[in-house]
Amino acid sequence: MKNLFFTTIFLMLLSLPLSATESAQSTSFFQASKRQPYHLSIGAVLFDQNGLVACHHFKEILGHKDIYILMRESMENDETPLMTLHRGLKEEFGATGEPIAFLGCLSGYLPDSRLSFEKTTLYIACRVINWNPKDRDFEDPEASSTIEWFEPNALISIMQHQGIRFQHRVDADEAEMIQRALLYFEH
Image (cartoon, rainbow, N blue to C red; front, side):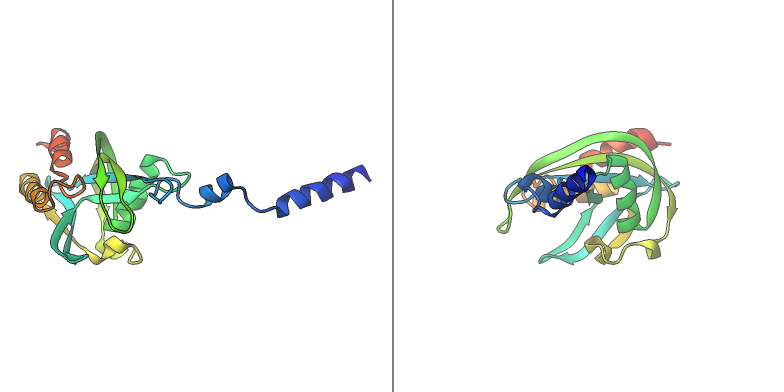
């Protein structure tokens, strides 16, 4: 009789609605929302065996032409930064990579009419192990880009000009991260 009582109480507790804390955790903890205007991503400076750096090239996105960005993947609940890195490389680039060094972060306020928020991206230098663009996740929004490989200084210049074009938005100019990664990949 005692076991039946506790079993009934346990089943009743399971059927109660989620608390505010539990329902907040069912959404992405690291993605910006009106209540939590902070976002965390993991970025990659992915080098190949020739010292070239991979980046997205969007011919047009959100009304802007010729946008270049490194791999940046939003953290998901229960992921470590390295788990997010590996998932992002696979989904966005169709690549696997070997993490070489943590490069620091870029962080800044991103104004937007729908939701303004502070975005922080932690960057990791990686060496490509395998790359096959056919392995990209074509459900991922970044899959609409073309993956291009650049000589690092050429991409640094492109990023710096893009940063000026977008009034020094922190997410438009990732040149500093490429510059930092050069220390680990110079021949």
